Length: 125
Image (cartoon, one colour):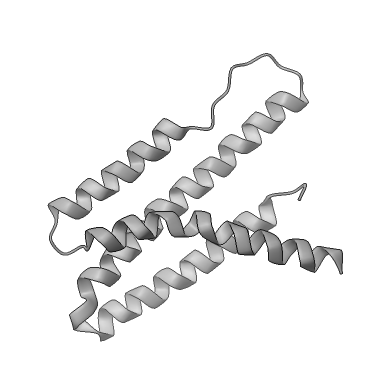
């Protein structure tokens, strides 16, 4: 894929739909409130990390394409720090499930795989 924007938009839409469903579950099903809130918090953090990584990848590709000798990174420290911050927030406040928060952080990155496959197949036809 030459253009990452459709994949980023698809992952963002799917993640927002998942968050909306989880918030509806939080409203309607009282027994799983901690899990749905934790997963929603993790999805927010994962989506921020995913979009930040996309911005960094764009900057790296522009730097390489323009033959600039600038040092670059993909912002791993920033992304892991944000994930740790969200995890600490989940531990500190008892209304959030830690397991759901940690698993929610990884979901947007994992959604990029089927979204990329789907968009590749769709564009070939």
